[in-house]
Image 1 (cartoon, protein in one colour):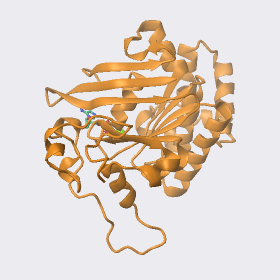
Image 2: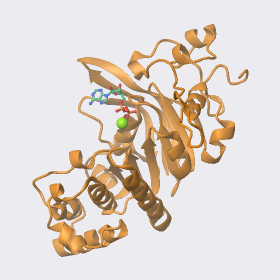
Image 3: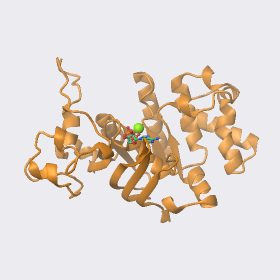
Image 4: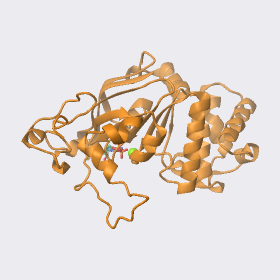
Length: 313
Ligand SMILES: Nc1ncnc2c1ncn2[C@@H]1O[C@H](COP(=O)(O)OP(=O)(O)O)[C@@H](O)[C@H]1O
Ligand SMILES: [Mg+2]
């Protein structure tokens, strides 16, 4: 359904054009959940925004994004409007930052359906109330007349999910949808997303910095480092078959629930953006297995892994 090929995104950073996404390729099948993981700044949000055609002003894309045989990067006018209201929808990390505080929940939920899909207000409200019920908000009619500040963060994120579903999208781009929520609310929101997938057959690009969470809810995982996709694999193979030293590092830097660990092992060094990355493999400066080749030559993606040392380690 979605196929991204050699995506490259450049953005003006402090006046200079900088590459923030560097040669990213992956695909998502209908109804499939793909988890995109990586540390802060690795380019996860930019990848999702490129798919949703929501990149900031001045951004330039190369490569291809194809949704059902349509070239997403070339869509304009009516086709783009249709794509953004019917095919894909995005849920952001901080619900409060992406909702207008002076408009009611009802206005927020029904606005796109009324302006883009030509729905009348009563029909749009009826659909909104039904979707609110689906995300666990029983008193939808009352909620429509409330303002965002009257709702908790968890409730507001459910409203965001309901809003994303108003156009019956086939792909949900969920950008760290639970990061701003407390742990109990996090698992409730994850359960809702899981149920929606099962009942609506909607595909999902699930972005998180939590590898274990992605492994638990997604069919496949893509690991990003410094704007590149360094490894891709099925979730069921995550613990056994992950070979990239960065993925392995993420897997071992998780706190253990059963043991008392005095110090959490972390990957030494700091994460980089694509434009800060050195020549060769971007992960080489932090990699315990790096050799001269890693510092000199950029590794190609071979069998879904971008690492010179896969054969040796
Ligand atoms: N609006 C912006 N303008 C310029 N650069 C940006 C902007 N937003 C993010 N960046 C840069 O793009 C890179 C990727 O960011 P992002 O996709 O947000 O990372 P992630 O979601 O993985 O944390 C980072 O280096 C970040 O500093
Ligand atoms: Mg992000």
